[in-house]
Structures are given as C-alpha cells and as structure tokens.
Amino acid sequence: MIIFTPIAWALWRTLSGILSKKRRQCGMFRISNDRDKCMEKYVIMKYESVLKVLRKQLSECKTAKDPQKCNNKTSSMIQKLEKKIEEKTRKYNMRWS
Image (spheres, one colour):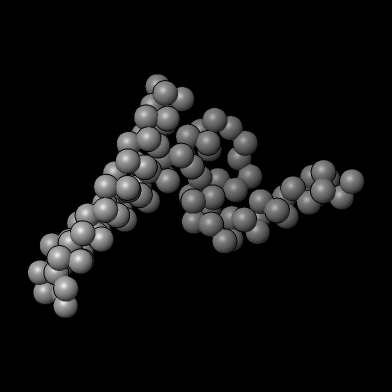
C-alpha cells in the first residue's frame, strides 16, 4: 500500500531526479508525452556526445602503444554506437513524428 501513495511517488521522483541529469532536465514531476519525448531525445544526444569522444580518440590512436589494436577496438565501439543511435533515432521518429 505504501508504494502507491502520492507521497511515495513524489519521494521516488525526487530521488531519481537528484541522481539523474536526464530526469532533472526533462522534469521530475511532470507526467506527459513531452517528458517522454525529452527523455528519449536526451538518450540520443548522450550517445552522440560519446560518439564524438570516440572519434577524437580514434584520431589519437596513432600515438598509442599499439596503434592497430587501438584502431580496431575504437572502430568497433564506434560502429556499435552508430547502430544504437540509428535504432534509437528510428524509434524516436516512429513514435513522435
């Protein structure tokens, strides 16, 4: 019974908002499609920022101890992340467009 009370819900949303930048940015207490849309867009933006860092790391692989290994590992990570971004973007567009 305690789980379903409005106070418990507000407490849960507050704690999750403290721990998550995504929830703080998109609204801790708001219940709407705009919040859901914001949270999905935030995930895509986060993946894109990680992709930028990986591409920068790929350009710096020349100076690594084992450039070939660094190149292969970073390239595979980039490919996996690009697939995730493509899938998330496709789902986002299907749902919100």
